[in-house]
Image (cartoon, rainbow, N blue to C red; front, side, top):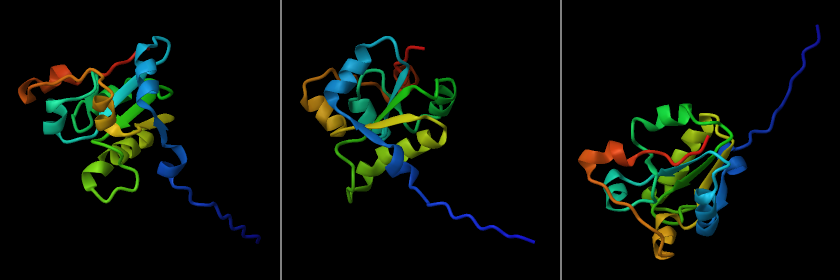
Length: 146
């Protein structure tokens, strides 16, 4: 009887697949019509309602999983938090990483974090949408082109 043992290196899915996208590159992607994409706001609901990137979904919205299920797994998914979250000690800054992991586990192949987060988007003078928490469903529609 021959017993073979295989050792596979454990690769952190998060470190391997999560890339960064600049504010300018996100703006360019939003103007393209040839590629499906989804923008996910990983901040708390209150922060989302006070201001978010146009078309962004609230990461904690119950509908995000059904939206994600219906989107092409090759679509670009851009996740953002309040600011630059990488290696941050602030738990709020790591929310985008947690949301990114959820989406990667759902099978998305191109998950990116917005470099500088919402702060960078707003500081660059880009449009910011707001919403009322009672009307949150109307505000959480993804920008996509399939």
